Length: 452
Ligand code: PEP
Ligand code: CO
Image (cartoon, rainbow, N blue to C red; front, side, top):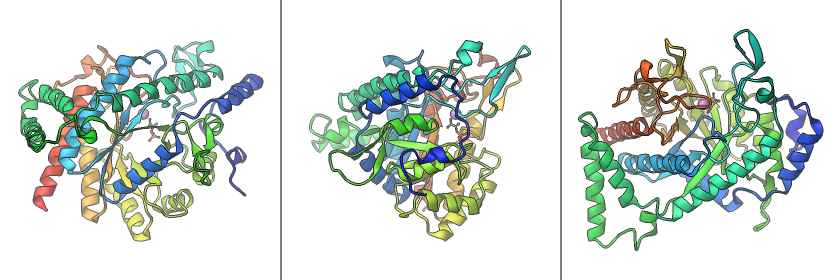
């Protein structure tokens, strides 16, 4: 069957809400299809080129942001702080990897969630699960959990204003490398525990001082004061994506672009070869991600890769492995080996979050910073063993000082989880935990380079 922007509708679909007001939904979809695109085709093509470099080992990918963005917490400070931490991490990873770092936020559209269970029971009352602010409300009431089509328009509006601010930050002074380095120096001087990273931070300072002495400064060098920043989200709600799927009217180049974000990914629960999500994604020209959990079968993965990347081009497809610290070596190796043997062109990225979610004794959903780092290490080991490219990392994080993941230098304990547990879905790394992981990763990369 020929691909069209709505051909996904002929395939079985998982994880999408059932709306009970068809007319209202149709009106919203019509309205969305008239709204301007959020991103521009040339940016999308540029990200594909950047991700091709990632797949070929010439750049490193840092993807991060909320598990689920929230309407309530949609404000300038939150956007600024998350952007700031990603830039701080990127500076450290640039040093660690000696490569340009491609920055992609789980921002400006990450408003819908697949859930393990379609319903939730509290005190004997069963209601639909919360599916992200683009679908329903966190509030555990019948009305709140009812999917509301108007939320699609709200998600579009919030995404547009987030993106506007991100673009301003990226080119308006927030990305000045000297300033980012000052923030990182503040971080490493924080406590005795972080002091071990001072060496890396000082090396970055020395590099900047050297460049300054050579006359290369933020005021005369664009690369030191501006950055490229891309957006991404899970492409779960295909009616929303379809309404924002457009042709490139400038170059009139053939092809359709999802314009809700630069990159979309397919979740671990919706990666069926014959399902609607794979059908939609296979026809758009954007770079796409495919989450690969422990149930991913090597043969099935090869078929998925061939379907999603029929021209076998680097930059089109990034496989985002999320196996869990205890199984990453065992589960990832067969996939990496199969892909290597097949000669299929993919990039590899490590999501060390989704395979490491546990329930604390007090009932909070959490993740241990140590498990997260352990999975990252396992991911790198598998790639080093197979002489393949560990292209990057994918974190759920925030710039806020939340207490959602346990461990880290400031040792968030299970008992502290209730202090500032704000996530709308999965537990995120806070700003300090995120930076700590970036430094640990940089250490690992530097040591690997030295041992080569
Ligand atoms: C996510 O990235 O928030 C998510 C739900 O991931 P996965 O599909 O890998 O479970
Ligand atoms: Co998540």
